[in-house]
Length: 210
Image 1 (cartoon, rainbow, N blue to C red):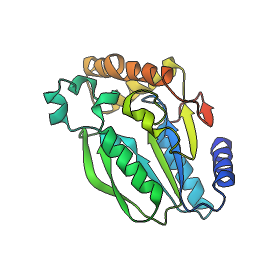
Image 2: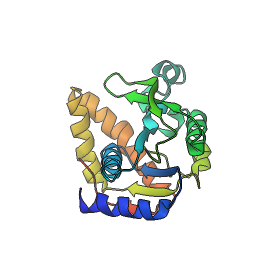
Image 3: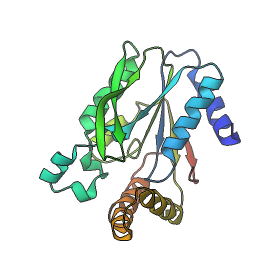
Image 4: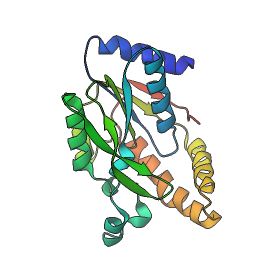
């Protein structure tokens, strides 16, 4: 376990006390390493005998057919391209910890969300929620304010994000032109929007995780 993850888990356990459900939010721009950190935090909690699960915000992407109809397919990933109401409903249901909640998961290779792809069990004490807009201050996303028990913001320098995003899209076998459109036409502008319109987090890390 890295010292960083060790510190986070120690703080989370201290704050959780005897609570039966504790929500941890990991927010940040595309390419910041949110998914990696979420998985590492869950693994560390489980290694300490705790029950934990990851809930990814990406599962709430609108379907491509809806985005095409609205002229937003090229900007997939901006705040307006998510089912925010559905996400809020799921987070509120998970908060209660009184029943199993099935959540969608995003398949990046196929660019689509798979409904009811991951169960969140009522016995899962720690739920690590990761996504771009968890601390976003604009629109309906602002309704998430106060719902999380512990918040982490990953805020790497833009040049680090740029390199990471190029690696991501080349990894999906996109042409240089296609990858450039993703990086400069969508992901980096989204990253700036997120970093410029965020609530304070309990912990902010200016690093990018692999």
